[in-house]
Amino acid sequence: MSASAVSAPPLPATRPTRTKKAKAMRLHRSGPMTYVVAFFFVGLCIAPVLYIIIGGFRSNSEITTDPSGFPSEWRLENYVSVLQNEIFWRQMGNSAISAISTTIGVVILGVMASYVIARYTFKGSNGMYSLFAAGLMFPMTVAITPLYILVRQLGLMDSLAGIILPQIAFALPTTIIILVPFLRAIPKELEEAAAIDGAGRLGFFFRMVVPLSLPGVITVGILAFIAAWNSYMLPLFILSNENSYTLPLGVQSFASQYSVDTAMVLAFTSLSMIPALIFFSLFERRIVGGLTGAVKG
Image (cartoon, rainbow, N blue to C red):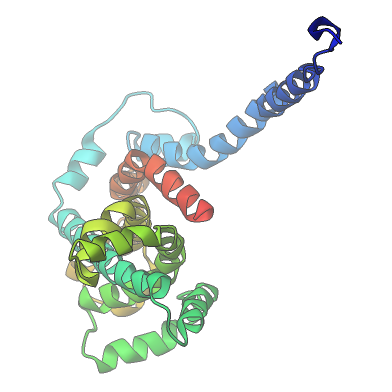
C-alpha cells in the first residue's frame, strides 16, 4: 500500500471552539440596561454625599426655601468657620489616633494569629478558626453592655484606649477569615527551602510570609481603618468629654449645639467624612484585589 493511499487523520473541528468563544464574549458583554441599573444605584449612594457637601456652600435661608437646590452664590464661610474651630481639629486628631492604632493592632495580631492557624498543625486549630469565624455573628451592638462594664472596670472610660482595644478585638474575626487563605496558599516547599537555608520559623515568617501575604494585609488594614474612623456606637458609650470625642461623635455633638445653623452642620459633616472617602477611594483596588485573593486561596 502506498503512502499516498493512507488517509491522514481528520483535523479537529474549529467551529465549536469559535462558538464557545463567541458565547463567552456575549456573556462578558454588558448591555445598556446593565449600565442604567449600575448608574442608578451609584446615584443613590452618591446623592446624599453630594447633598451634604453642596449644602455646606449654601446659606440657611436657601436651605429653608429650597432644600434640594444648588446655591445661588457659593459661600466658603461655613467651611472656613469649621476649619478655624479648634474642637474640629482635636476630634480629627482623636479619630486619626484611634484609626491608626486600631489598624496597627489588627494587622500585627491578625497576621500572627492567622499564621499559627494556617501553617501549624495542632489539636484544636480548626476549632480556633471556627471560634474566630463565629465572632462574625456577634456585632458590637449585642456586646455593648458587657463591653461597657469591662472597660469601666479596667479604668479606660473616657479615653481613646477604651475604644481602641475593643475595636481591635471586633476587627480580628474578619481579619483572620481573610488572611488564613492567603497563608495557607503559600507552598510548603518554600518553607522547606527556607529551613534548608537556615531560616527558622520566625525568619520564614518575616522574610516570606509577610511579603507574600501583603495584598491581604493591606486589605484588612484598610477595612480596619475605615471601620475605626466611622465607629459611632462604641465612642458614644465610652467617651463623655467633648475633647476626647472622635469625629462621628463630634458631628452629633456639633449638630446639637448648632441645630439652628444647618449650613454649618452640613459643612462640619462634609469635612469629617472627606478623609475616609479619600482613603477608601485611593485603596479601593487594593481591597478588591485582596478579597479576590482570599477567595481564590
